[in-house]
Length: 237
Image (cartoon, rainbow, N blue to C red):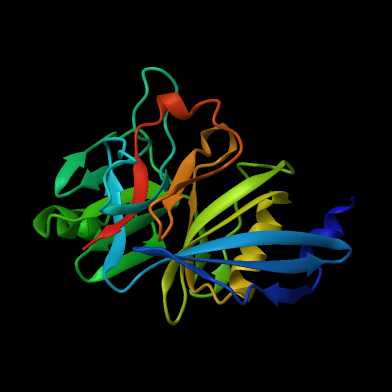
């Protein structure tokens, strides 16, 4: 497959009419076509009484206040730690030799995703002051425009991202093998104004809770999940 296919026009094929409502998460599906290839996506949106949070202790599936759990920031090689600076419920973890191109700030006001300026610590300060959350990752979309990343080169794999549109904040994932440039452009077609990457590959373990309380496992490659250090969740406010 030649690289030019990655920048072909996208066509929205179908969005599922029967979105699944759980107690805390709205789950929906859609597909997009790139040239002759069709990619399938699942979106997870918090219900009105739920929101996103960042955790450094692995969430328990028995905790009914949590409706979804996925991996967030990268985890370093041994000894494992969260890559970059992070804040969980106002408590800071600082690894000054490592950082990414973007950050996600979560407070009672909502979710913010922005490019990282290592000289500006205002978002970290706000997370600590308001007992909020903060983590660093690769920014994919800023102000509706794709932000190039070269870390994956031409590799294709399953992808996840946290996405802010004009009307909502949602998690988007695909189990299809997809180039990062294609994935980013798909997010923009979905209406992404800001988007930040979430770790996948062999760290793709995740789950969500249905309205009946059943746990649905997501992500196909869990090889490294036992080493994971941090998680993004949707939980009851």
